[in-house]
Image 1 (cartoon, rainbow, N blue to C red):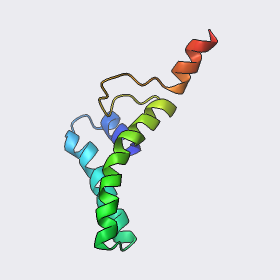
Image 2 (cartoon, rainbow, N blue to C red):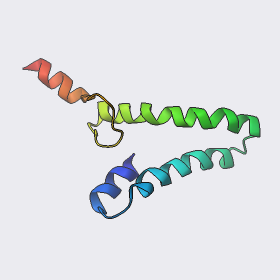
Image 3 (cartoon, one colour):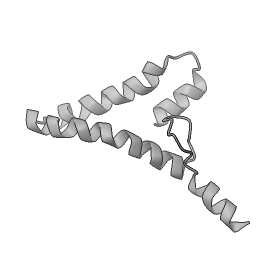
Image 4 (cartoon, rainbow, N blue to C red):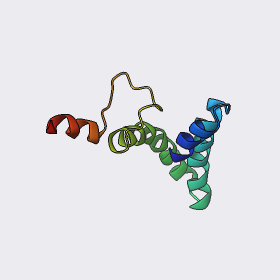
Length: 88
């Protein structure tokens, strides 16, 4: 997420495949290679890795307020926005 955020802010000309593809490729290859997973473990890991992407985006939306990555069909307010509106 940090890679995509600051790459997008600093290098506006990079294609979206770099922002999403490179972190996804690292996620899908680094853990199985570094941990020397068996084929069964890889078959269990890959679906979980894909399911974690939306959760990670929700967490970053809530905690940091970065809303511009995964286009959810609804707006996810950050905790600062949520509690800031409740305090007033």
